[in-house]
Amino acid sequence: MSDNIDQDQEHDDIMYPHVVPFLLVHAGCVAAIWSGVSWQAIAICAVLYWLRMFAIGAGYHRYFSHRAYATSRVFQFLLAFLAQSSAQKSVLWWAAKHRHHHLHSDTEEDVHSPRHKGFVYSHVGWIFHRRHDATDLVKVSDFASYPELMLLHKFEILPALAVAGLCFLIAGWSGLVVGFLWSTVLLYHATFCINSLAHVHGRKRYVTGDDSRNNWLLAVFTMGEGWHNNHHAYQSSARQGFRWWEIDVTYYILMALSWLGIVWDVRMPPEPVLRNEQRLGSRVVRRTAEQLARRFNPENIALAIRSSVHETELSVRDALFLLQHRADLRLANMPTRDQLLAEAQSMFAKTISLDEIVDRAYELLVESVCLLLVVPPPMVGAVAKSQANAGIYLGASPHRLDG
Picture 1 (cartoon, rainbow, N blue to C red):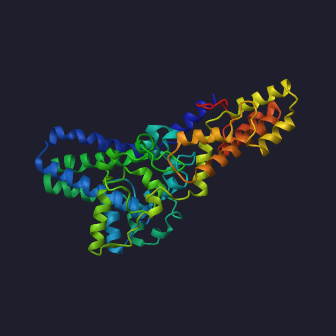
Picture 2: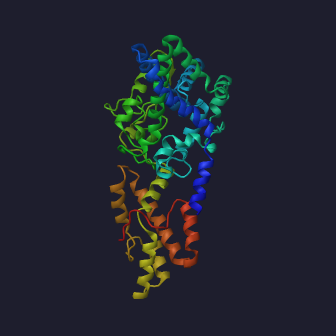
Picture 3: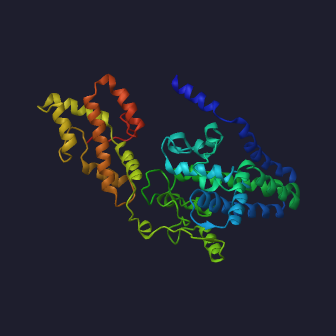
């Protein structure tokens, strides 16, 4: 019953009036049947796609969200205007949501995590939920102080209307439909695929505590944004293709602009990051350890230990002591640290912080098992709920190791 209530609340939270323009843009693409498809309109579509994709990657993302380089106030405005011509809301809204995403990537607090909300929601559904409509200007206070950016924030659709009008003036209805609408829809889904597909399909070079992946195909269509695992490993870098063969056209253009003096202070990943020799931060270690601990079932372990108490002279108190102080000793179904290490090596990419991850995961698993041993059975559900909120799940795991 509660599941149905939650689904109804999610359903009621959708801002349906906001969905209509989005759907109309998609439906408008079909109007090419009547407007015709001219070579001029196709050229406009191609130019607008790549030009605005650069503005999305270099503007919305690498500049306004991560400050990966510096530029003048004039070029900052041009980037914002061009980015917003893609009809993906204001640069302040976009950057605020993206900074929030990095703080909570693939946790329950993430605004678009396929792991927690599913692929469709992370791809497009989250945009139309009421709780994501407001802009947290505190998160983007470094840019909210510019009156011209606040003006664009207030009239966020104005750049898109201006570009649409220009397309109509140049090539008529075909220019509007094929040139503007087609390229806008392509931009929507290429961008959205980074939030959804790049957290589901691809390869992980770095341990980042989330599901970010490198996807070469997405990198091609997004001018370099598909190297998403690289980006999550070092977010403030203007370069996201860390290897010579990882094509990152946005970065190439930014370097060309830096030679012309239009941008400067272009930030690069440090050598330890490129060599994958950087020590992970405490937040990444914690989240990764939680992922590792969830591969084991503490309820089964606690049940096995309780059963062994009746078969041997070992008491629950003795079991608790061994769990907390002797990781080298083995209890029934309790994985050793070496087993956690082996599992971690199979789960995660190479990192010099692997021992820290394993030690933390072992601590979390021991804490969970100890709680289940000392708490009376009627209270297990309450403990499980409190532990789940902390990131450790006491219920059945989709993948279990039983010693």
